[in-house]
Image (cartoon, rainbow, N blue to C red; front, side, top):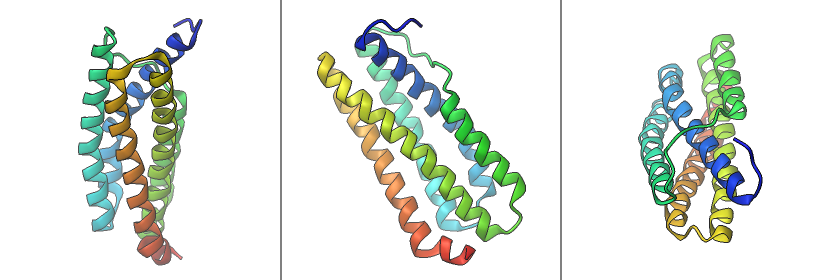
Length: 162
């Protein structure tokens, strides 16, 4: 896709985050399987369900803009997930693995938060009024997931790994 203006950049970034969410949906079950802490496993399962809702909201944004929902390959999310997969293969201690899984999940959340924040700002500038609510809902879920991961890491899992 050739990017000539902010509208094109908005569409490119929308496709990027759509790819990212679908990629996460595909890879999150591996993290669920590898996590050993029941609270972490539940957080991941809950977020998998949220991710499906986020994909649905993104499809709504595509629809209101008259676009076909499609992804644009996102090397950033692929790299974050690849790093997590490598850690899952290398770490034998379950407490350390759970701490690493939280860190990897937070890297994903932070990436998504930046993308949704940018899309939200651009949607307002471009007058895409019908895109604002779904994008705002997605960013709020991502922030909430990040907050839950932080609490679990700080209150329990990082201490166990130490």
